[in-house]
Image (tube, rainbow, N blue to C red; front, side, top):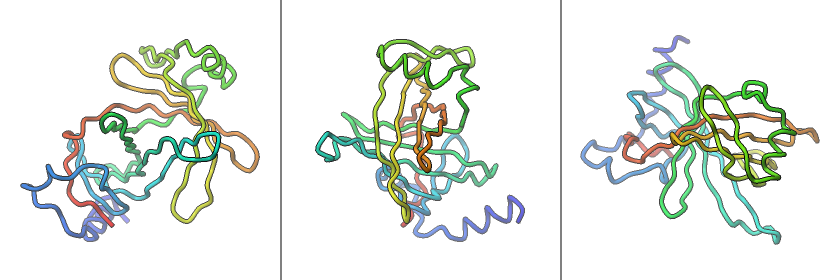
Amino acid sequence: MSTLAKSFDLLRRLESPIPKNRRYQFDVKGLKKGAFFRYKKRTFMVEEVFVYEERNKNGKCKNSWQEFKLYCLEDEKTSYLEWEEDDEIEIYFCATKLKLKDIGMSITEVEKIADKESGEIRFDGENYAYDDDYRAFFRKEGALESECYFYDFESSSGESLSVEAWVDEGDWEYEVYRSASVSSNEIDMISVGG
């Protein structure tokens, strides 16, 4: 199926579009699978919704956030949008998936920075300073819960690098994502899905 045909097929699934004069009343907190929104002159559909949880020693959730797997109607690329509510809503758009070798680091080097809680990664002409590291649990609809570990680094320009360690059949796998902070008013809600 061509890009154009697939995009039209997806748009036909659009249910209950939000009138333009009411879109300001909606934000990413209400998005569900099948939702549509515009960001940076591109239209995205939410393909999947994931939930992450940080837990205390007793197994109770102490922090959670959502991640949306997105399909771009214009270029057919997959990207991700995640949000969490701290003092205010924090939103990050991720369009770049990398490997550890792309950032010139091994997982041992990343872990040493986390152990010291100080250090940085230099990537693509930008310095990303250590911000945090933590264990989380990942859930997606119809799948078993997975354990993952995050090492977060932030640049002065508002971009972040997240080194993610995932357990897959007893072995650890590593992924790196570069994300940019997004203001909620940059996202134009078309429908909330459901």
